[in-house]
Length: 488
Ligand SMILES: Cc1cc2nc3c(=O)[nH]c(=O)nc-3n(C[C@H](O)[C@H](O)[C@H](O)COP(=O)(O)OP(=O)(O)OC[C@H]3O[C@@H](n4cnc5c(N)ncnc54)[C@H](O)[C@@H]3O)c2cc1C
Image (spheres, rainbow, N blue to C red):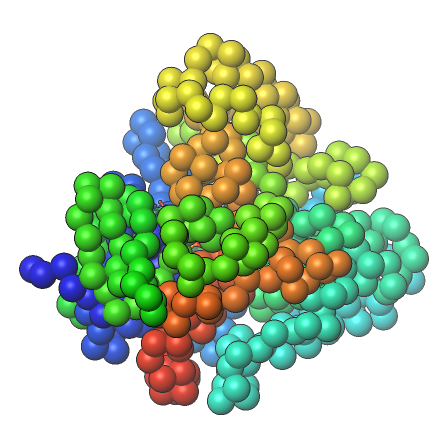
């Protein structure tokens, strides 16, 4: 086949695959080029000793009939082909704070009633909060499916209000303030920086309904890749892109590590934008733009323990558990999730335990070879794991003795596998104090070079899919595309 494409997409994370799906479905010749041997980025899973682990997609929301993600999944031909397991409606997330556990229930009434039992005098604040979360989320046309004729929506108001600041304005009860901020690990939040907008999107997304994939999130990758190939597109794995090539007026294609050149009318980058900046040597991209992208800070990474339990020993937790050991939820946490292997499962084989970790804690080993970073690194991981497992044991007594085996990952692992800068979980850190400087558009100054993925629009399954629609809307007619999605 010739190396000429309408669109070359760098990276096969969710953003790259959704762009690949949309554009190939609409008749364009697309190549999605991936550096790893498997496509999917954060959607990938891995198997150790017969047990599967998810790496970066543990639960999804808004999948009941007519809800936002379900409508996109219909368009992406995923809805009928994936199996989901509903998380506990009366507590899909549980926040453990200062010795008590607080369940987040689905639905605005459920949420209000359940939390009000702990805060009887605060019912109206809780109600106001959860209504506001929906109101903010639903202003986005591509989330609410309203006003879709004007899909380019930027909520500059709620980008400039901080989450912590907003929650403080709602209630003086510090315990409630912390409980309402209890899903901050889902956006790697920083109290006085993270814009309310992202907190609201995620809160409403899961409040509508919450599910785990049965059998792992990699099914999404398989199905999207199958569709892209069926539409005539190509997925090229094991092929790192090293350079984006330009002529005087725009991008002409990409060069791969093996020196092969893929010619393209349009180039989409789904990789971390700061990494992309190092692949471009053209006066069409201004130095000031490159500097701005490179100067944005990253969300934190994490240390993860992938746990294999002995068969039939540990009851399946049908909720996600967020534990905060300090007075402020913004000062440290761990979170713990079970994987769903089959519907109605009673016990669990595979779980993940996360604790946030800064790049600096592992940066000294970054230049050592992957898989062979030396005894000191292994010792660091062993000590960290022991401490985290003891913390888990305090919350779930009797768990440790049921562990058959476990494996760990650090920020270096994320950096190695997905190429995200500093191993950041969710890419760039949006800052309400500098919201224009820390916002990255899907458009660039080069007319046929676009960005996709979690660093534009928002991260997570919903944020990345919406971002991909906006990106593709630069190449095909956006109104026709939104009609296709609405009518799916
Ligand atoms: C630990 C963790 C847990 C998460 N849990 C959830 C969750 O439960 N629910 C949810 O909705 N979201 C979750 N997220 C967020 C979500 O996974 C991401 O926002 C989303 O998957 C990111 O997709 P992406 O397209 O931006 O890119 P990525 O997944 O980062 O993919 C980028 C791809 O580009 C490839 N690449 C990089 N450099 C090159 C190159 N030079 N050439 C070719 N290819 C290259 C990489 O190998 C990778 O495959 C989680 C994230 C993490 C890290």
